[in-house]
Image 1 (tube, one colour):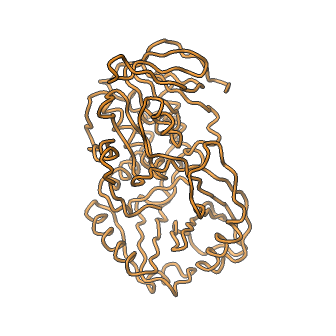
Image 2: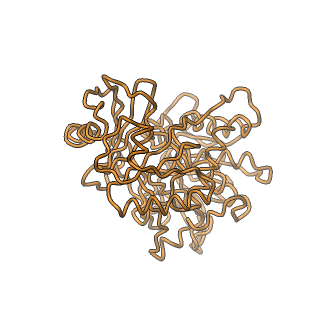
Image 3: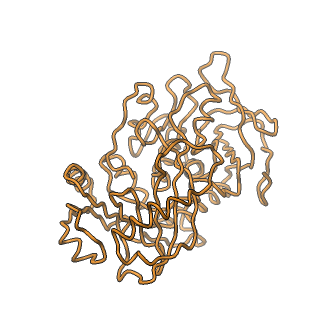
Length: 407
């Protein structure tokens, strides 16, 4: 696909690092490589659709949270929060980079049964130990602060309003990509259609582009989002990642709420949050929730009338009179093993690195994951956060890395 400012032809026939996928994960990796004074290699980023029209990074709800059950996932989001709030500083003080903030209205988990309430209690202990400021709230406490909820069925709530809420993921993505290109990472609008191993079968030797060029490579990063399993299969590898459709609606209310709405995770499976001064964003998955075709972005319009709107109006009665402004469907790169990332080198194909399977957490995890992948490419190890628990070995063992707080 031809896009202004993008070439489809690489300038070289060999690169030290080839990144397959130029959305926020690939761009974060490319940027952190250019940021590292110990890396002096060449970088090629191959993006199949330079418009990014349907990529998960662009269609994301762009939220961030500390409320995970796994300490490592919390640390990853904490770094993202620092990166977002200090983006200009990370970018070397570049005056063109805007000052960004996080809209800290928080995530409000609502438990309507004791099992989930116990999970929120256990998760809070992990979160507090990691430095988060999660509060558990009784229905009476929730009603006092957020009087618009109907809470007859709710036993417990959990919320954190520090570094948790909405952030401008699009601007961060734009600057990671722009800065990486300015620093010498080469981006092309093309597609990898084949991956060739060396005769011994233990290293990737080259990638073949849709336009026919064969590009030799020192290391390859699979950053191809929901298409990750297809990319892995080109190298003869199995990866339990598939595209799952997620539906989003933006709406206005006839009677707006008196204060910002936290990103509320309703027991119905619907989530809803503040989106602007007078607008709200909500979303859900389908039921059933199968893998879909890579190019399937059709809306299921029956979901709104039959499930989403009734759930919204039940939980927040003021949302009985609302009007949809826009809607879309996007894809999660869904890891069917445990909904956590698969990261780092394949143990038998050592120069093929995974950066996949974020299952809806990718945007907020991209700074730490890009930094960690760049460290591995440069040093053969993680130097800041130890991200090795996300390694492919657990996929080979069929041993899930459990994260209780998956939306």
